[in-house]
Length: 496
Ligand code: BES
Ligand code: MN
Ligand code: ZN
Image (cartoon, rainbow, N blue to C red; front, top):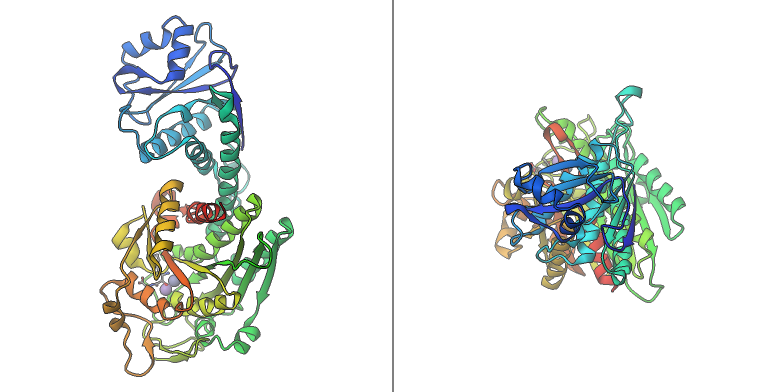
């Protein structure tokens, strides 16, 4: 999908479909007002008939409006003019996406970035419009044969701005939005891919393909022999039960030269989580193909960063493996030694994410990062606590938490902080090893983060639990591409 910008009076810009906003109480947006004037009050007359009350997301397509240069006008309800907030704007954009895809228009002209939205400037409004339109146009139908494939998408959208001076801002925003959407698409494709295809080896090959596409990305893949040499006993304990070899994928992006220390992104890449010997119940077990969405989000973010050519250094570390039951799989009660030297009693083989992340986090320390952010579909408890709207965030460095929160709020990819208080650490006490890998029923997301915090003492660190946000269940089952918007935004802000 392509985006561009045009400046000029809306009643002079020709289009096959011009999109304008209508507020409740028959109030017109500035562009709607101009078209109304030019058509001799056509829109006001229509609204008087009650055809579009202006509730958020209502749409109405009208044709051949007299004396206007538009073949069609798409009117979209924008709710109350006063309390326009981000989530309202999101519903407006999603509504026009659906309408535009339905009518198969080739190119639309969008005036909606003129709306006043609390906390979102023109650049953010434009960027989010690109993100959300791309989001709606995304399809994953490569496993549907021939006629079952859905070919409907929107091809091109032009942003209309009234002032020339805004053209540059809108162009920058389009570039950012497209880079983020491309990263999200990659993350979603990887997430949606079934686990019989998307193995650790496949993830490594996709990383290599990304390295071919962007020369700025250097790929290095470690195998199990390397992991043994590095004494990653914890990571290796998870992959024991699988026929698929584990991989540790490292992606290096050097946009700031040698001197500056990198941000490290660590993504959980469990390509299928059966639970292992502590096997999961069958219902919805298919969704455990999404247990590599941390890895997918990190790879997607690297794609966005490379496309935007950000002047910073970033290194991605992705532990990828499968968690399967087997005669050689780890058992509850097994004790393993992590790369850090700390010993772990595996009381539940289904708490495997932390077991692979701890060694990856220790390994990430080798790059002398100033910041490490790990992303993982780590606990079902996070979904219970926050639902699908926010990722859980836990950190050992308040300013980092703040920066991530700001990035989340402005990218439509929000997070909510949970406490990492010392009191919770006791829940990980083990009778036989330095720690257990589970902390009981209470505060499951927090105790998982407490476990990780024992491996991240040397640097500023934040953990994002994306168990609720990385994919949708139910009728619209599929990967969301989160937290690519949040991470990319954080890195853009950091580079400025
Ligand atoms: N990948 C799961 C977490 C998960 C479960 C994410 C359901 C999304 C939906 C993780 O490996 C896991 O199994 N966690 C356990 C931890 C428990 C054994 C302490 C969980 O959440 O039940
Ligand atoms: Mn698990
Ligand atoms: Zn898991």
